[in-house]
Length: 197
Image 1: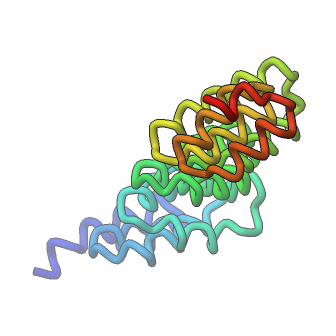
Image 2 (image 1 turned 180 degrees about the vertical axis):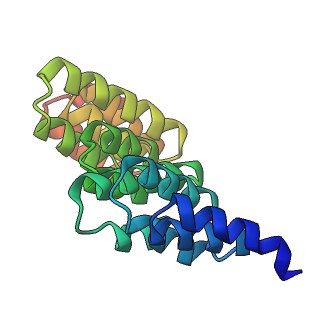
């Protein structure tokens, strides 16, 4: 019944700017992309918060990226929301890239760690200016995660390069049946005792 909508139309017309009116109508009709576009036209923070909420709920974060690409602060907020969304779907490497686009390097490092992307995690730790002890602890955590995730060759590399643990590296190379790497490591560090065992 058109009469049902007249009251709504009158209320929207009196109290809101045109973009807000259009957004309210589009929300009412379930036209989510259009509602998001109209909310993006509004300069106030409440409208942006509503736009971000709508984008999260309706899976429109990629569309929101396009709408807010020219506003650095709002774009960063959209990218952070997108990174959270990717993380909940276990797309940690993609989430790390979104966190970087949002300017959240610590969160990106955590996502790289979750993804098992140890090189990127350690490179970012260095870029963040972490001290040697903190980097060593990160490397140990990454190596432990990799050992459990059936990637002992990478864990061995971390043991060797960051933890300076020749024994652990040779053992992990052997576990991975990377015999040449195990032998080369033992020879390189003059650990003949490891070759015999």
